[in-house]
Length: 198
Length: 260
Image (cartoon, rainbow over all chains, first blue to last red; front, side, top):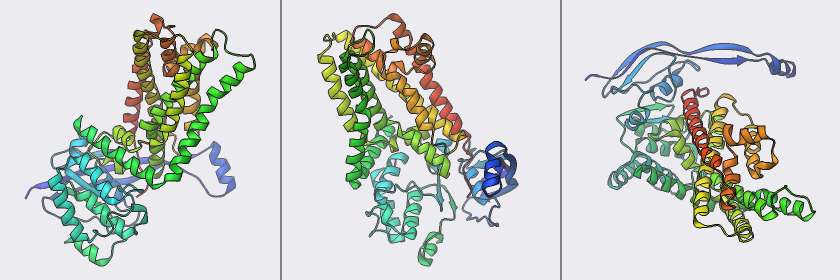
């Protein structure tokens, strides 16, 4: 099978401000701030073949999440190139993101005050999923993740694990060709982790 | 277009569900918004009641301007003002990715998702004052009503332009709580007859930041006080909105996110 993702010399740099702690340093920072360049991702290259499941490992702050954000087209690289299914993620964003799914473990797509099933319906409208496909996929995934009991309860009353299961369903409803998962198993029990992987 | 309508319909349903979940909060917000914005027309009544006033303007003419401003604000609050608050919040907390991964225009979806029913009370309050004011000025002809409607809609575009510019600023000026105050101060120039301001201010409020279109020009149309210059001012209003949209989209591209 051919490459579905090609990343070449991907680099992301940004600037931040350095400031010390304590009142004196905070006061000083009001007038003078030292700009610090940060290299979040440095010259990364890799290929992923169609059908592969690939994980990125690294210590905290290594740039794993930043790389995933650039792959999803939500952050612009400073230099280098990305090609996913023939798309440059930063160009034709709407067409590209229609083909992918993404779960960011520490952020939520679910709408806080309403039940997850209503958030799913929102994504149904956004992705233009037909009624038949929506019902079929929701039924299938509800069974896999055993969420039938709580998808009609307001998101705010769900546990972290229950929410993560719903996040995963939300990202998969439109049948994406490529899925990017950034810490998708946060809060999940071992059974659900197993179900996601297999 | 059909897809956008469907999305908007879903967002309205969600807004209704959220409003019904926190019923007391909804009622309180409606009331507070109504009381907060209705106070301006009441102050106008008090000013005129004490014998003072804006030269060349009767109390009902001024009330007409302020009621149009109130209705305009209510429509804006319900339909697109949320984009400013939600952008400020998302940029600060680094949640913009969750919108950027959706195959829909970022500006549109944020406006749709922040649809709010809370402006309904304010709109009704403004509408009642509007009716009272209209009944106490000479009844406008159909042509004047059409001119009013045109200016009123364009005035809402100006409101949208201001909201988008303020939202765009929040990408650079992260977490600044003064942005809404600047927003409110700029808009407030639209609450009064433009003839009370110096020429330099009138130039700014008509061409640079055309807030005069929010309520003064629509009211002038109903009162038969329009001149050809007012129609020319439609152009800067459109340019203002286009600039707002362009700036917002440009700033979305510069979004940096926060730590993972």
